[in-house]
Length: 539
Image 1 (cartoon, rainbow, N blue to C red):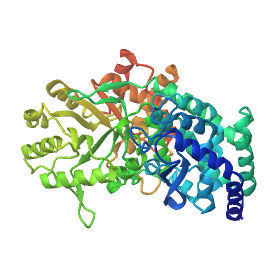
Image 2: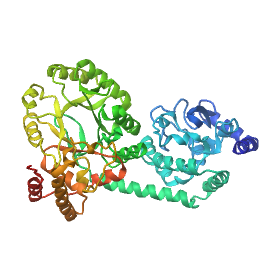
Image 3: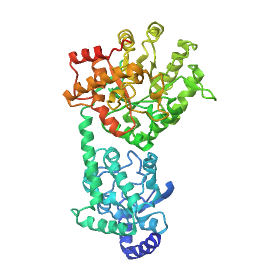
Image 4: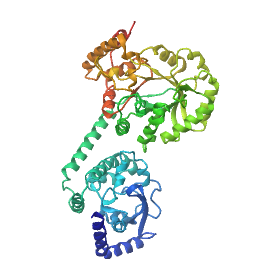
């Protein structure tokens, strides 16, 4: 029915508007060089590209020449083009796209291929619909469009302000459209041209209001984010690092891919720019999801990934630091992350047989090739202080397990920092969730949850009981600051270790917000000493 409507009415409008078409064709042709029409690539239904037709409003061959989006200040726009854009008359030739079935009167506006390439599985359903001449996003963004037309950087404004709301509204259309709602959208589009203050439909307005509230919340959180510059680098990183082990979706209980993608994007929006993953987390699944999540935002973030852990065909784990494997592992990580460089590449575990000189000479070669920017090491003990001393000028960080409940690597962090000027990246910073404060003696973990294993000693026997006592004490301090137990536990690490960053495994936006509460306060020296003393388990 909708397709029949599109064919009949597009033909009627083409015939009725033929005189106006002719007038615009003549004016455009006489006032600037080039033909009267612009033809550009757009992505339609099922991800198929087609040629969209518009009246030309810019100088010939201007699209993508400098910037993809166009503001009123753009010198590529012709004088008559500015008028056509303001009145939307430049869109009229899309009636031909509608007639031949490439578009519809109502549907998500056709998008540039570069922006569709950024779609994750969250946005891909938008492509189930035939793109339209108008949609909810086209008629509700009047304030944004006004600011967009005067923006100095229209690409940035479109990508950061207009596009996020546009995608929400297009997904709403995907889930709720009907012939009646399409007709309503068409009528409202026509009325909005002349009467800007007409109210939006209630459900549409609710989406807008929620988006604006979320933007204000993100702005507030972003102002609180703390950063350090990793020694010997230009990497300015948030002191809260988004840990990617749960993103591997193995051994962390129930995880949802969409929740993970939304959490990554939310983190970037609030200023968390540091992301840690590994080629072994979920056998590459963590890197794949992170790569999908950061499309269009790569330049805004710093990625750490690791190499050195491999698996045999029968599932046995072993370590490999050979130069050939380092190169193979890196190329695989680059492909999964959909990037051409890694900011910080870490030796996950040393294999005990590859000469250290071979490992670090290979890493230096990869730096010169531009595939990695800096490198560091993980899971090292004090024996490595002397072993790694010859390479201290290039090793910029160490990453070890550390939390209020697991302080065995405290000496290692402090000595490496003094001797080699390294940053301290702590994994297990919440003791696998124990310091979040939600686990009790009665807690039963799902089958397959790694915390059931004996190797996770914090969750078993007398040590577990002791740890619950420590958590109760942390909660008392947290209450004083009106903070979460998780935030207070993380704050201990940041206030106690020099040049430290806490890695926290995140599965949802809610978890991220709880962890982000680490910013905006500091523990007193007395509170730090008290927590140090009670956290020691002597049995």
